[in-house]
Each structure stands twice: as C-alpha cells, then as structure tokens.
Image (cartoon, rainbow, N blue to C red; front, side, top):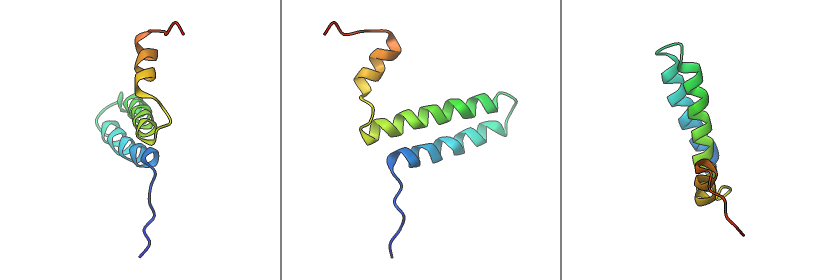
Length: 68
C-alpha cells in the first residue's frame, strides 16, 4: 500500500495543533496558547525541513547581528 507521507512541516503543525487544542479546552488563554504552539511547530518543522537555519534564527531572537 502507498501511504501519504507528510512533510516535517505538516507533521509538526499537526502536532502543534493537537497540543493547542488541548490547551484551548482548559481555559480562556488556550486560544493564545494555540497560536503560540502553532508558531513553534511551524518553526521546528521548517528547521527540520532545512528551510530555517537554527543558528541564524537563534541570533535573530537574541538580537545578535553578524558584521559580515
């Protein structure tokens, strides 16, 4: 049988959505948490997929800039 293969980005988004839905069931801040989980899942999925360089992303978050 031929199973549909999900890209790492799609798989990460599905996992983040499941976690976000669980958070949504437990309070009013769940909607915001769902968005945060989706964003984290997207970033992790793109890092695994190779679309985002983890070191450059961390430098962006910490405010570091390269001189070159």
